[in-house]
Amino acid sequence: MSEAPRITVQELKKRMAAGEDFTVIDVRNPNAWAEANTVIPGAIRLSSDKIEESLSKIPKNKPVVAYCT
Image 1 (spheres, rainbow, N blue to C red):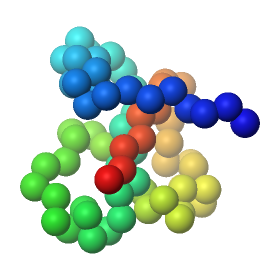
Image 2: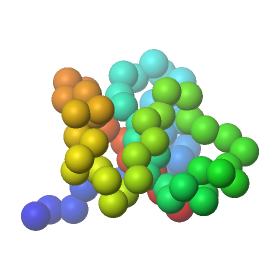
Image 3: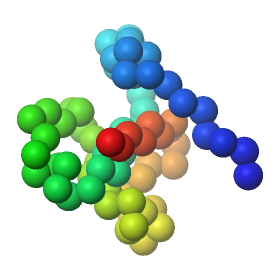
């Protein structure tokens, strides 16, 4: 399996500012969620160990950006 392409935070911000339509998935652990001061608007929070059972929550008609710490 090939590695997924990566983008920087700056690239994500640029793409969001340009109005690009994509889904953002926050796969940080629940402790990181609790400690976070900010959340990307519209991000879907999914625990990384439950992604497979949560696939129905991820739109299939647009690119997906996942982020973690």
